[in-house]
Length: 118
Image 1 (tube, helix red, strand yellow):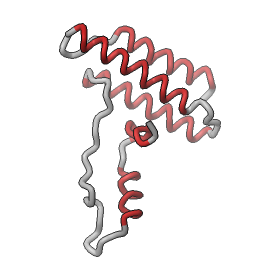
Image 2 (cartoon, rainbow, N blue to C red):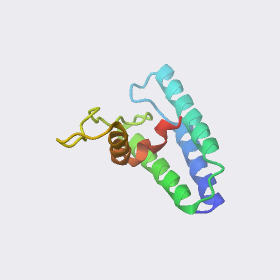
Image 3 (cartoon, rainbow, N blue to C red):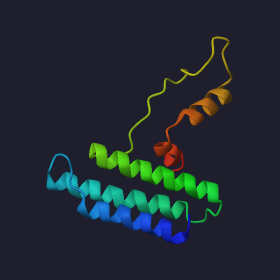
Image 4 (cartoon, rainbow, N blue to C red):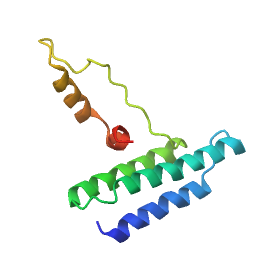
């Protein structure tokens, strides 16, 4: 992915924010959700602007496109939560906490990868 592709994606997010209509159709909700979309895009794009590794860039773009698709489909700009029980991935023998957290991180959907960092 090139810089122009990333900037095109950023502009796409800002266009979606400009035309966003809240599901409740209330002006206050629409304004709140528009501001959230713009702020989240600015935060995540600025946070990741120093990434040069091609694989990491593709992962970030994949996350952004997934969040756009889910947001447009459900008409909800906020990331969908993932419900994992705190110790739900342990085997019957039991695992140490670090192994639990590693498994939880691996099970996290692509559209929530950046949520730990913000």
